[in-house]
Length: 364
Image (cartoon, rainbow, N blue to C red; front, side, top):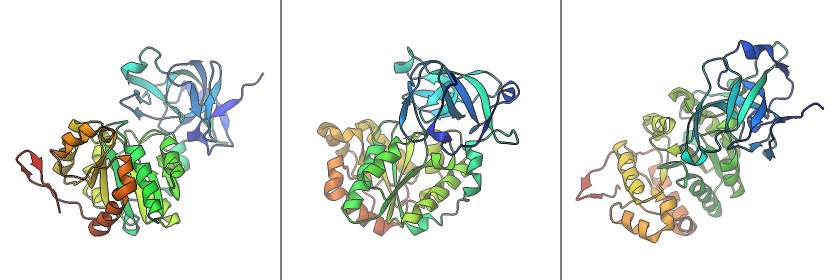
């Protein structure tokens, strides 16, 4: 019986194709290259997100269509596209990102990654390997800041993976909508999987997109110029819904490579109307503010996991005068204050403030 090929989400634009088994012996995979794989054993990933966004169960012996890409996930895997010819690989991300694991969070070391064997590369009628990034390459715009000048971008960043960035961003979307604003959402960096963008859409975003729309299996190891061009292109795309605000999330923590590249790029930072910083605990909240200010960025508000604890909020309040909003806080004064702030300070990122007696000074 012929196996049905389960197409992962990152390959959702691929319909007409051939399978070349010969290229397996001669081609070194590149980011975005699409191939057909056989599942050898089930590890961390027992499902993939299919081209319809449905999570599909995979079993040993199944065949899947997926794309090569890198991954940076402190709570899961660090993985890369190998720079050599080989036949066995790992699932790095459920959206269909394939590579080779370099390091693993301890909680997944026993099961390890799901292992695959490459069957053949997916090619067009000219026997050229189909690449997810190349499919969309003509849509990419060069960064100019023009798109940002036509709306207000609210940036959601955090101290680490799972610090509360996505949930905060979605609640900001929801409460701006309740204020009568048109709002779009962008997930600018990360690894292909639509959960975050879907949450923002569920909470009211007029439009919700992420980097995978332009064929990026992930943004890990992208160049600075490529990240800026991606930002310009996705932001320009959201202008179709005429948003008053675009809430944008950058993945992982502020020390992560791509996040740091963007936050230390003056042109990028100057295109942002307000920065919201999510943190896991009081130490990461206070040190996060200090780091951001040393980069010339004054956060509008602090949010994230630490706001679930009144005691942690108290600890932060004794050291930092930046407003703190829990999820309920956004329903009250948070959204109103954000609108006022963004109207006043559009495009004006503050300079590094002074520190006095162990306490951060409020920046006007």
